[in-house]
Length: 360
Image: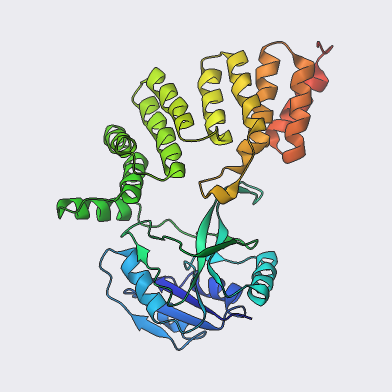
């Protein structure tokens, strides 16, 4: 069995740290906590689980802090978690199975990161992250914000997932502030950082600036394919906010330059036509979304609803507005397969039952 060091960077996490460590402390062989300036009970709580607690002055660089935490590890693999992450019971079992069977030749273990949920707790947003990294392998974190490790060697895709459960909002301006400080200091952002800078501008409703950054990112042609596709989508969102309807559609279609259609993009195009009341065209794109194979291992952001529920429920509405009530009802029941308790499904079912007759 391989050994694992859990390596965490923390600051003022007294409300969530115990929850995180309770879910994972019995699975790992060592816990390393790097504190970047807590003023609450974070270190006191950490001391219940480990003696390996170190101070590291915060300098607006997540990669530097993570590299510090990894440098303190002594086990075969380093595993990272944020304080508001947890391993659910089924994922704890899967993690233990992985640990017992992992071939030591594996350099990096990728695992799903679940970060978005609906009202019933079902995952609505997920993506793979490098979760276990072979210790002393030379791989290091890079990027002051949205830091990442570039995997080398043999990569394994694991079954266990990490669940991100925030209990309070984080500083919404922190990432943008870090990016802009780097730019003010004359630093050139690498393609990944440029991509995330554009997204941060979008989140801050600075549509025009975000569009300029993301279009430049795409024009330079150095981005990873999944980031390129996502950048096209965010360009479309910016164009929409700026009132550039045709440009928004063109940006979504541009994503097909980089790879086969993603269901998420097809749903966005379907929505574009739906909002124009062009229901037959909208239905075409929602139907295409249903043919897109979901492949989380590509590493991009995944919205599971786009691979079943959302296209079905939208095809129900499109069909109904085209006067095809029987087809609409069929799609509603398909949507119910994915989310039986969906309020939209239940509302539609009642609507169809109330119809005096159902046309083909």
